[in-house]
Image (cartoon, rainbow, N blue to C red; front, top):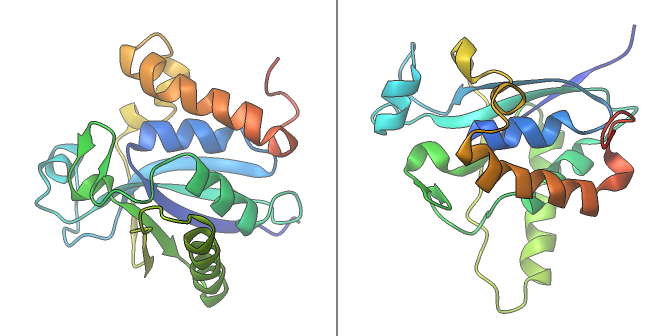
Length: 183
């Protein structure tokens, strides 16, 4: 049986991040959901209000023999703005914060090291505000959020926001794409 690992990222709208990570080789599943809040029963409506403290996140199950956590982090930081606090583009609120919810000390260490590298290389740039916190609990999002992009590619949000991210990944991370991508 293959060994799998889990990564949980909050990079704004989970429709975007789910679509991005589903493209990658070694990613076995991507589930949108909520993490980092206080409610034991978060719903999209409650999380969207900002009252629960949850972030929109994705839980990635991956095969580390095909893609590393570091590769996933690299794609994560390249496909959202980790320098804006509680927002991604027009999406504003704590639910859209940039966050890595680590599941092991190794993930925490790797994330902190990459943030340091990125901060050093961004001469004169804005500081990275990505939160690096332990995953306490992941709550799956409602069914209608799963595979949102795949089911709604003509939605205006998908065309204007998600399509450019997917094109960026195809261009910048071609070596990490699943074999069937781009066909």
